Each structure stands twice: as structure tokens, then as C-alpha cells.
Length: 151
Image (cartoon, rainbow, N blue to C red):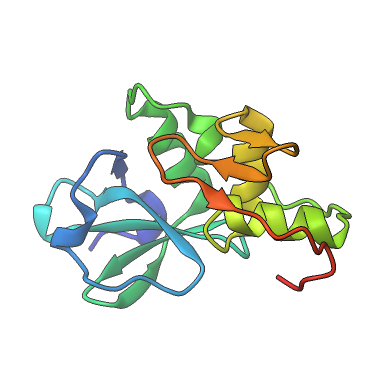
């Protein structure tokens, strides 16, 4: 019997995670697929729990823990064209005013952390004169002038 500490993990950031589950935990991000060992029967959706920065395997809604060091190494070794820094996240505390929180939540589709990453990368346009915010390949969203609105 193989001990779980000796399992080989293989990650595919472009894997079809929806083949393995139709649901993922709330406030999480699907990354791709993960395989434990050589057997395809041990493959599932690779999901990042945003609140904790923890990677898990999900099969039909059932969550299995993963060795975090091994899955990060597997992601790095996956040879993806994508930037691993987009996937390996680190929890930090930030202080934002109400308007910045509202904008970040909007940019990130409700996920403030994702919105901050979008804003920092400059993948959007913002015009205070026109009061219009637009994401790439998206319809412009008109912003309210009242900045006291809650998120």
C-alpha cells in the first residue's frame, strides 16, 4: 500500500476540471486538474480555496486535501505557458477606503483580491471624467457618483 506522503502529484492547469465535478466550494477558484500517482482513477479538479490559499482536489463535490508543497511543485513543473504567480497566492492584509473596496469588488466579480490583482495589472480602463469603467471584452459599466454606497 502506498503511503499518501509518497504520492506523486501531477497538475494540469489547462485540464478539464468540469469532467470531475460540477460544483466547487464557495469563494474558490478552479485551476485545472490534479492526478495522484499514475492511475487516471485518482484524477480530479484542482481547486484553490481563496480564503486560505489552500489547494484541494474535488471529485463530484467531495473535497480531498493535497500536500501543499507537492502541489505547488507540480504546478511549477507543469510547464504551462501561464504565470505561476497568478496561481500561487499569499495571504496579506490591506487597508482600503470604501470606494476602493467597491471598485475592487466590481473588478473581481465580487472577489476583492481578484479585483486588486486586475487593477494592479492595468487590465482595465477607468475614466473619472466619463464615469465609465470597462474591463477588456466587456460592456462598459456606469459608476454611481455617490461614493458612500456599500459593496
